[in-house]
Image (cartoon, rainbow, N blue to C red; front, side):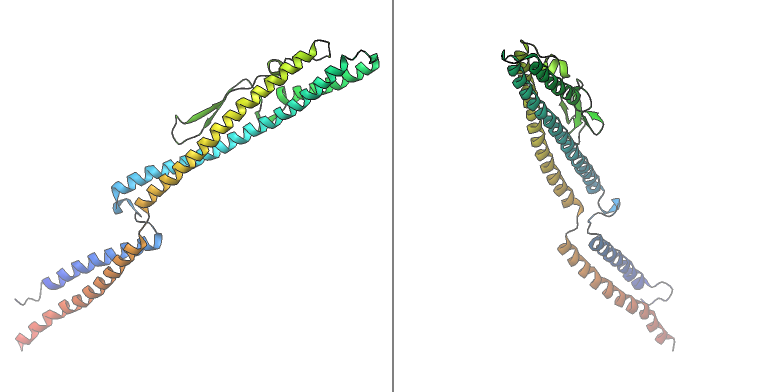
Length: 264
């Protein structure tokens, strides 16, 4: 049937043309952005899943940085305690020398002066001014670190005792001091062993969190990233369809002109 007012063929062709044009624009957008999902309408459920996974990756990467800071904190503590070990060794040597009966009073005074200087420095390091980014290195308070994306993923470093309980060293050389210094050396060694064990735990946690972040990022990428080869094929197909529907639309619009021949 030949009609002029309503060109059904042209309307139908235009509908397909619009659909093909939208599909072509979508494929072009995906290829340009590199993303399969550019807005929620592209894949609502996929977007929801990928956003959760993306947040997990972001939180986990932040936790890896926290673990690195905790490790550096422990390393700094251990460095100070190494100095304390060295000073205790020198103080033990002074205590042994002090118990030499062949030494005169002035000699023992000199030994005690050096001992006092070492003790003062050790006390300053552990019980006074040693800090890490304004946080006291040696305190009885425990420190808690967030080492994962979930609120329950925390790690606590036990507080380190102050100088009196850590060393038990008197401030003046006496004949009974040697055993106290040796006990203090053992206490410092125990403290360092605990710090070392904590650092080993943190190293494993860091490795696990980095592995988790990598795998979660891959899962998020599989949902969100575009398959370039597949999308290029779709783009080529839609481009041909747009060109074809454009040509057919021109033909459909020209069809009513045939009716004019009936009016001659």
